[in-house]
Length: 337
Image (cartoon, rainbow, N blue to C red; front, side, top):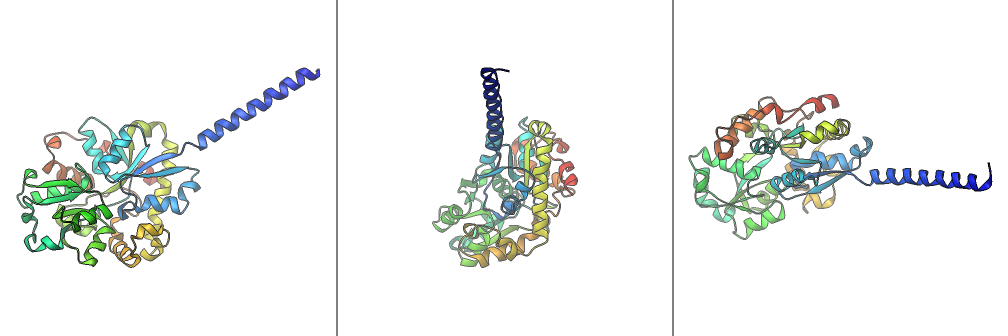
């Protein structure tokens, strides 16, 4: 073999190796994108812990957690293909099926909403019951969000129709607290750690509590699964192995929560998640720990409760036949066990 031929083959081989390296780097540079409907909310804690404790990485995954203020906005990101999955409320799978769009919860993180309806302290005198919400301005994370649907249902149990309530989108965390403090809303539904922070500071009073399974059953008449990871059924069909590894990591995070104290869990989080009051954060988490599922499996009777609650207030679901078996699967969570 002459030198020109040898050099040519050597150059070709190097080019092929460089091309393979480029492809490998490109694939590594394209992480799995999950949208969280408020990444600093305690209800979505398993996703944050899976990242912080290295569980995604241990599964050979590069996961990018993004954040949106409400589940409605997160849902939109999934439908446009901007993200591969949403860490949000299970009830979105039902609402989307009613619109002909099929998504499926593949691991259930919460067995209660983890939300509470608060009244501004300055308005508390005239708002001591759910029936007094008529004509009031109520804050929710986003219009059409789970917080709005739950608030409507609680009010409907007191005979109030959706038209009797005025909702405004105020987000969560600091934006919710500011809206309450400034009097832009009379009451509103939000999650921890904001609930405990406002109650402890005396800026709000509790009107309805959906933070634990026991409290939820009392108000909603059954288990109401909240936080989950849901994906489009079409994407899941083509990415079963990758999806299983994501669920593995999230179930491992649920096990970590079940086996550690609220203080130990808080130690794993960025300081900003504690909202400047570690004691309040830990107290809120300790009281809310029962809301997390131990294994990622859908609570028995949960989908039926969610559908009943939604059909009571959402016109788009009234009279519609929903195939609940297509809204979730326990196959991945059970395999993770």
